[in-house]
Every structure is written in structure tokens, then in C-alpha cells.
Image (tube, rainbow over all chains, first blue to last red; front, side, top):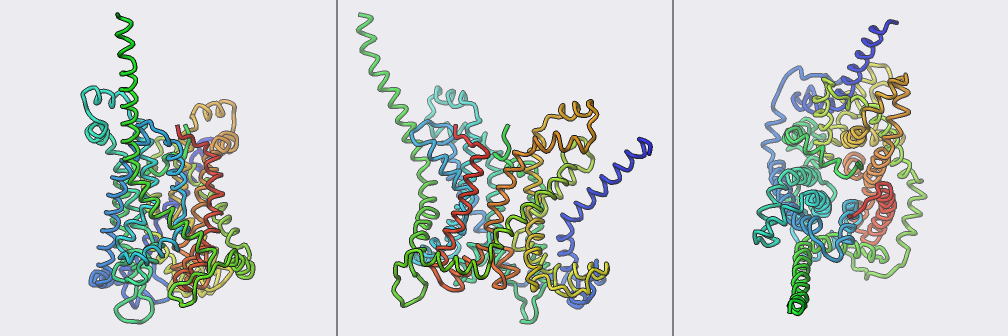
Length: 281
Length: 307
């Protein structure tokens, strides 16, 4: 085989591989969309069809007419936004202290935070559930508070390393100008942290939007407070028959599209945040 | 006179400096208080409670008084494990890992080349599974794996003549875990790919140029340059995935329900389905210990320093 031919073959194989990976990654999502656009009859027909023969938006209409689903969208939005805001505020404080100040107990505090990033939710499930039952706390505040278990340590960790990377001279200049520690934090450091805040905020939002274990457990006695993952997992149609997969797929598409858009818009930042601390050097 | 003046000033200056340092320390602690209060409330206290309840016979909504039972719950768990789940849970986590990482490894090689025209699109596409809610992806895969030819896999398999189009992926005990593994690997591909991509980016391109000059083939380059230099990243990825797959919950609970449990879905079932606070707590502690062991490994491998 000549060199040119081998190169051509290599390129063809390469693109075949790329295409195969793309299909693998995107096909389940296509299949959800495909199923959501089918009529009920075509949906349960065998063998399954690879594109809808008769396009219908009926499934989407029923999803948007479903009170429980809309309620879940609202609940999820409230929970995810609150968790994000809360962990950014509290996390920025802690990150500032750990990244830019000297005090006794800094090392141990950092270790505790790092250890907490790996703390499994399931380990505190029974304890949290008991606490919430005793306090009689409603499900939505319970979720907001308990989601900090996985958003806060990560936020603190990333923001600490970010603050540490900012030049000390900035702080010193602010102090020479007579700014207090908190003033220099608010007026000098915080604006510079914006990119890190966006990254960690997005990841916190996605995690909170995604959470299922706590949401399922805490809403057992309070179905009104169900979030999107729980609603999708327990989705039942208006009429009690077999599982309404057409509507479930429509719901799946509806809740996925905003996140896909968000993720694609902030691709670079998310990539940076996800791999933060994973590779040395 | 000069000397006296200086002597007068020095202690004052020292006190001034330590005042500043003390102020800094006080501010720092104030700033840390909210974080630690929250962590105490939602992590340390509940975890203490879990450890305590794991040694008792506590149940929800029961008239029986709670008794201290020592390690009985752990004993019960162990006997259930031996009877029902003969170490399969561990093996499962392992399979997810090994298969997964191998797959990612080969795919990711495609990505990092600079000036690769498909790279941008690929980068975006690879994030899609990450953006899908786990519960949603579980339902999508559940639909694709339907036990009749209304499902994608049975349709495709019957066209290819692999089966008769009625394989029950979730009912057949031998196919349950492979189905879960496929779902989990799909969902976590992006994270692994990105992690390894970050690792690949740290390999200097001169090494490949040098290998090229020495006449090493692409395959040889992969084994002699890429793999050894990527191994720290691979180790980290492996541990991340282990921690993650050891606590797998969503897909098991949604798709298999009470048919077959993962460690986490069994723990949740004990708590909510059976109201066995004590048993559920014991299961939590076991998972925690397992994950903790891996976490220590993680910190050792990374050589995390706090300075």
C-alpha cells in the first residue's frame, strides 16, 4: 500500500470512529425525541420505527397540561436556584478566609473541606431524615439545606484555590488605601472572582437540578414538593393504564433541553471546573 | 536618647502587628463559621446519629422501645449480603470501572489533537450525557430496553438476528447488571473523557516529535509515551469512578426498584420501605467505610497539599 493510500484509510477510519462516538453519545436523546413525537399507537407498535411516521405534539401538550409536572418544574427551579445562591455566598466567604488569610487551624479546615467533597450522601440519609422528621421541616427547605452537603465543599475548594491564585499585592494595595479586610474582599477580590463563581455556580445548579436520592426520600410524605427527577421517575399519566412512555419522553426532552443549552453555552467553563484539581502540573 | 525612643516604640509596634494578625484571625474564623455550621447541621450531626442508630433497633412509627443491640444490625446485613448479594455488588462496581475506562481511553485519543476539524463539535457532543438528569436518562434507557420490539434494542437485535425481539433486559437476572453498567457508562463518559483530556493536554508534544524521529509507530507511541504519562490521570479517574459507582442509586432505584438492589438503593429501601432506621444506618456506615477507604487512596495518589 502506498503512503498516500494508507493516510487516506487512516482518515476514513478516524471519521468512522468520530461518527460512531457521536451516535453513541447523542442517540438516546434522539430516541427520546423520536418517541415523544409519535402517536400512542405508533409508540407501542412493533417493531419500533426509527422516525415518527405521523408527527404529533400531543405528548408535549399533555406534559404541559400536567399540573404535577409543572409543579415539579417550579419546585426544582426554586431548590436549584436557592442552593446555588446559598453555596456561592457561604462558599465565597470560606474561600476568601482559606485562600487569603493566615490563621491557626487553616490546614485542618482545608482537609475537612476536601474530605467533605467525597462524603457520600447515602451515609447521612437516615440521620438527616430523622432530623427533618423531628424538626417537622417541610420538604423544600430540607432539600435546599441538605443539598449543601455536596455543593458547598466543592464550591469552597474551588474558590479557595482561585483566591489563592490572586496576587497578594492587590490586597496590600487596598489595605494601604485604608480598606478593611471585608472591603477589600467586596470591592477588589469579588469582582475578580466572577469567572470562578460562574463555573462553580453552574455546577452547583446542575447537581441540585439532578439530585434524586434526597428528593425522593424527603418528598415521600409530601408529594407536592416533588422535584423534576422524582416527577419523571414516578410519572404516571392522567389515565391509569400502562406507563405513558410517550409523555415521559416528552417530559425528558423538555427538562433536558435547557440544561443542554446551558452546558453548551458554558462549555469551556464547565470543563475547567470539572477537571479542577484532577491533574497535577 | 535615640535608643530609648526606639525601645519605647518597639513593643508598641509589635503589639500593633499582633493586633492586625489577631483581627485577621478573627475575621477568618467569622467567615468560616457559616460553612462549618451548615456542615455540622447536615453532615457531622446526622452522621453521628447514623452511627448511633446503627447500633440500635430503632424503627420509624413503631411502639417497640428502641434497644441497644450492639453489632447485630451489621451481623444481619452481613448474612443478607452472603445470602442475597454474594459480593456481586463489588464485582459490579469493578466491571463498570474497567470496561468504562478502557472505552474512554481509546476514544479520547481522538480528541486532543490540535487543529482537528471535528473537535469542537465533539467537545460539545461529549457533554450531552452529562447534561441529562440521571433520572431522565434512566427512563430513556428503560424505554430503549423494553422487553418487546417496541423498544429500540429488541428491534435492532431482532433485525440483526441476535434474538427474537423479546429479551427481558431488566427481568433476566443475568442481564440486569450489564444493563445497569451500560446505562452508567453512557452517563459518565463525559466526565471521564474530560478528565483524561486534561491529562493528555499535559503531555508535551516534543515527546511525540522525538518518538517520530526515532521511528516509533503510532501504536508504539501510544504505549511508550501516552500511556505511562497518562497513568496518574488514569489512576485519579479510576478512583473518582469507583467512589461514584460504589454509591450508584438513581438508575437502580428507578429501573429495577425492589427487583435488585445496589448498596445505596437497599439502604434507602430499608429506611423508607421497611422503616428500619437501625438497619439502614448500619448499611450507611458500611458504604461510608468503603468509600472512605477509596477516598484515602485518592488523597494519597494525588498527594494533595494544603499549602
